[in-house]
Length: 530
Ligand code: DCT
Ligand code: MG
Image 1 (tube, rainbow, N blue to C red):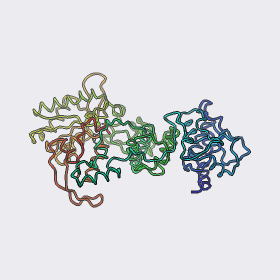
Image 2 (image 1 turned 90 degrees about the vertical axis):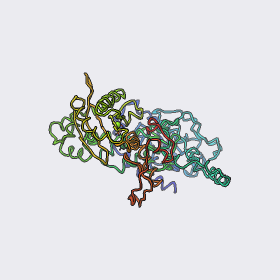
Image 3 (image 1 turned 45 degrees about the vertical axis):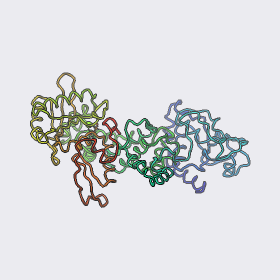
Image 4 (image 1 turned 180 degrees about the vertical axis):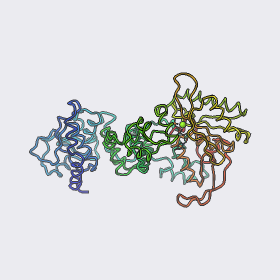
């Protein structure tokens, strides 16, 4: 790609993004936020990805600096910015200059550092000088990292990204050893799967500053029913969480699975500036904020939220007073604040005890186990998911209605949302409970009664997390199996997404047996919090 072409494209996209709006925003900014006001720069477009160039220019303008679109040797630039891999001879060739001794030539990683730290950083470590013998592969042109946030374009992927199994050397060696009866040494390919890994992995999320922003994008797209975009962002988040190091170039982001050019643009924008313009636009959109609020009403999805908005409702009070609500939405609106508040796990434990005691009074020997985030050891829970069964395989059948009746009678269950949902041999109740005493909040509770033969699969499913479950299901597909809250099946035949043969149920007496069948190590609940 010629640098000229890239420069022109960049300017088109730049002029689109830096319209009057940027100028106006800039003028409104207090002086301390215009920390780049001393800059009057030219950015050499060569080697800089189009979107990244546009972002850099936008950000410099936004924080009070000046950017010249074309190079003019008579102008007095504060800095001329060049991509990290460009050396002085190449820069001179591109700009048709005999000498650059009058210019302060600085690498883009300096600009990124300033934008990230929101202050003018010292540029000297990033400066390229005429007399330096620049060489792409020489250490002399390497940027000295003054901060762990310093960005450099580095070759990817990093060796640690590739699992042992995928490493061709290792594979080759093992293939040779197979002949000598060492085939058991070859690690199973399941190792790569999320569900095979502990969520308590010693490796932290190195890109949390990016995934946090992308999570916000997911929430927004979910509230507007843009499921494909939401899914695309979710996949990218999963990939970034697994990535062993901080993203340090657009190319690195783009090289990762599930990340295309547009997502790489967004990721790189956050990596460089700590911000995402698109998210800021969303956050400043009143309509989107209201849609988000409406989709948080229990029983309302994106379509209903849209409808309410079109009907002119703007607040939860509007809904309460004027909207035509069904039973669930009425409960959702009345208890809006309580439902948004996550309860401490101690309160979830108290709720579990109330249900356990009531179930035990009906049928001795009954098992009542809280699953979900509580079982995964989270400090707070959005709701309480109680799974009930009986080891004799039959006594659970009589418990469901009596248990709910008793809990309503005692005043513990205050509202029903879904009185009884039957799927196969399982029954699910969704409602609201409140512990006795002053200052107690209403809490969401699900009670699920299952036959003992389905208990292990139900435990796995209702313990989650949802992300962990998705990974389990994908892994099943790869092994011609299927898994849901009822059973694990093997010998499943699929044609594309369609199941041609349902397969046969594999007995799974314990959670451990489910993991074993899938050929992954057993993970206790607190290690499934992905
Ligand atoms: N689940 C799932 N897929 C979903 C939603 C839920 O597999 N889309 C499973 C995994 C968790 C379990 O059901 C209970 O669901 P929630 O209560 O919604 O989730 P949680 O992990 O308990 O989180 P929270 O604390 O918010 O309730
Ligand atoms: Mg839950």
